[in-house]
Image (cartoon, rainbow, N blue to C red):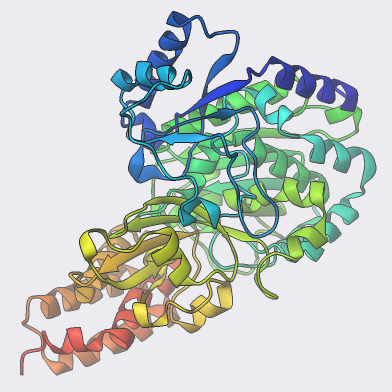
Length: 544
């Protein structure tokens, strides 16, 4: 495989596209609402109307507005994403919402100008126009099960450029200058991590994609893998070349069967074309990717527990140092990034470090994908530049609380994050700002709460989650989360005293500072944030 062959595949794929595309979401959310049957009925209706020469029905990944699925978009072959701060849809596109199989004939009839009663969405709504797709640029456009569809969208051109025209050091330097930070939660500079692994000494090196997404309400990584799996494979291959690795692993939880199936398909397709395997693009670079399926333990999102699981051991963390960059999988230098981090790599290589560095804030570059959920009108996936305010996300894009309700708080960062009150919604969403508010970026879950939400119950819910998911290796987490849960239950039932409240705060501090890994260290965060911003709700439940 060389560049002319890659471009020929892209040209053939574009030439085969019909003037009108009917894109049907076949990501997990829409599939659960029978979108596969919708796609089949659309194909039958196109054939019945003798439109197969001009109309193509295409299964695509997540179309973002998950609350209105199954979604079907009808438009020209060019979807049309704008540059700068906004994503603009093609003016002739129509979005149909909550589509049923019986709606298919009506949608096809509308192509000839007939009236349709199928519910239509508003593509000019801020939910769509305020987005800036980088990670999600192909989501909802390409067929995730056909490598040709990805190649037609400039797929694997960045990998070719890297292997044929750049040294590993130049690749690391490009990622460093871009300012990309790890999207798994902590926000560690990606270029620094890559440089550390590249310099590490070892007979072998490994690259791992952490797809063990376990935060309640989070589905960003799952959607990326279901919608654009080759994007992640390309990012991993570029990373492997940069750090000197020849073997990669994608660690994904078993609860993601659609993502697993599409990853397996993508890997096989790339291997058949010689894009994965030996002497990729006629270079000296060999790279193989295997999938490892986890049983769903939340602690395996922690990198040392994840590596133990890949090795066939019990998924429990171990103290650091040594860090994985020096001694990781089977004792060899190992690079670990999450799905979204790898999905940013190819666009950075294609468009340059300066392009990416000019998006976002001075310390938080680029965009961030969030799963917007909870008491909000528009639930789904959004990708916005770093620095976008919570108010813009929750009120403009999310549409506020349904039925005239009032937003009370938003919880970011999953069980490791905190609850931010509505009074602080003018704050920008970036790593530093969220930390100052007592929360964190996390992997990108964002749960909205209204005035009916009891914040003590929220803290209790997340503590119960951490208690259940604790691996039990260290006493502060194993025992401390249980005692914290009991104290929060006692408070919520109105049976606690002020001494119990004082004990709660002391125990939170102990668990945070003495637990072995990030699960225990961050477990008290929802308690800390609710105590800080909603202390009156705790006091109202304290018995005198």
